[in-house]
Image (cartoon, rainbow, N blue to C red):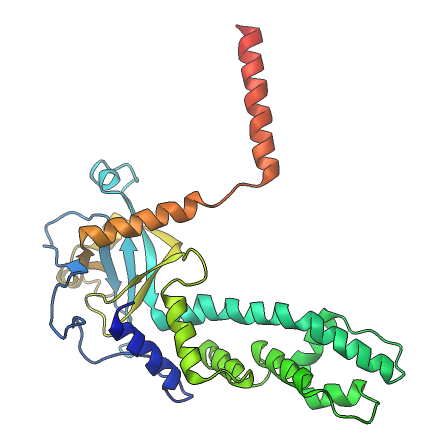
Length: 318
């Protein structure tokens, strides 16, 4: 991961609890401080046709909001030969913060809940029995309680032993409430950070985990990290390879100037093109991602049966 992006990750972790968007003031500024094309993308003349790897931008009607971005993945030959019915296929591109809050963090919170809730329910069931309550607490029941009640109320309802709850169990229950979003109205990043604080994770560890997530740690990533984009004010963007959209080519303009001339300043328009090495790497990762998706076993069995019957029919009917 480029050093500048790692710095922005640390800023996200160290920023105040309002978690304002990570942006800079300079639009079209490269990682080296320069303006214009970089080693990652180039400018494209407006008279050039669209191509795979073109970076699309759509201005927000709200001047305070960030523009949205996309990356064309339609093959060059399909565009030239009009095999896509004059439609362009692109993947959504978002800021690193948006990726973490929309995709990675919700998954991490769900994993924590799934990992911890069963054991916590079993501990509470044991506590109730020691309290003379012949009841059992299921994982789903505990989740319902945690969404509506603070830990102190749960303790009062199930604990008749006269002893305080085990400190480790209190931490787990508190963490579960946080992961469920029951404690406070926080954005996902603040919610994740609050959980890590409850678990006693230092800030440096939190920063390292975010950096690892953006670097694709923990398995084959379904995204492609882009250090920067033309016409963008921040550093670090993520192409979401599973978030695929199509748009008619007539709705996309080859430059911002063209979009404005046509009276559609907020429409999708091209702002640059990834260099060949980068755009081919995106295509390779996209192809590998979807080639790894297996089919249901019953579907594969049905295909084998269909093939066998078709072959038998062709042979016997010949």
